[in-house]
Length: 286
Image 1: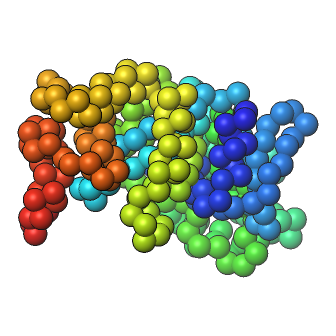
Image 2 (image 1 turned 180 degrees about the vertical axis):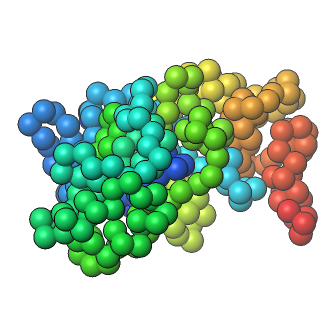
């Protein structure tokens, strides 16, 4: 719980709840605690609740910027939240939107004066009902096993759900090293050490996230990263070639090594990260 509380109180924290098929961004708010122990954030339009016992995963992956990386944390869920639906269906006081692909539940809870209009949308596909719902007063809800976000816009809402085509089995980008049997229901992104400012690299931000990696990262990947950094510091030759998440881990280590002002060994860059090697050479094609 202490880790989640600290994250929720971090200035500049970004995040989203959902899956590649249906998601809402998180906004800043004031910390709250619920009687059942869940913690969350609340502001003028949003109310977010998180299970403090949820499994956390800290991760690092390479980014589109060849000299940087992506870092964040997930709250992991282990089972589907609802059955997938092909059309909108009324459940209790809300209209189930059928967007979660069986992993999350997405719904719209109309205001009392809009209930009849909303109920009339039952049986329609989301694509057909979305324009009408966007103009209807009410609360948009994403529910997962470990987190719930409710949003009641003050005016006409922007598009709340981001839909991506793909097979139903896809729960997250393959670049995120999620253990088998789990899926990330919520993402949190503390401020990145390479962004937001002219200083270039913020050691305090970096150290803070590395502590989270030690506590909540995949142990095999954190061990590999320590080996890579120790070898770099010792001037040792490159580690054996790797693939998948292990290759990404070494590429992140190289980018962080370079970001902290160290010289990038050409042999390491050539083996693991040609894009970074081109940047280091000043190649305009990088």
